[in-house]
Length: 164
Image (cartoon, rainbow, N blue to C red):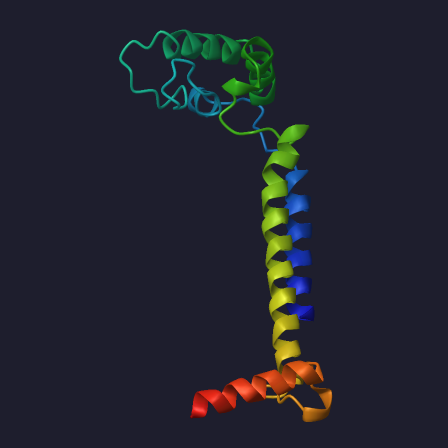
């Protein structure tokens, strides 16, 4: 039981450690990098770069605005912050690693890990408990008879009548 617990703890530490790292951004982004980092607002669910609607009413203006931001010499981080300030967090194609998003991405994995540990513990206890109990049905001793004497006599009388 020590090995799965240690593995779960190591996985949790790696997951928590990776959540705090900031994404690498280049100083001068390309048009494609910036378009890929933003989600098209037309409802297609694709990035601005991948939007497959011809003359999309959302992607076309966003592409022009991205080109304008790049021409002004802004970094990818500055461009993303500008669009997040204008449209909100929904425009970012990847979730941020701050606020509620950290909990939203880590809690399910933690819950699954704890559930697995709980199931393993219960199975371990059941297996350990079954090894301690004797095999076969329990034998009732006559001196530990749970029936009252008058009920025992009635039972024996009725069994004799059935045998006739």
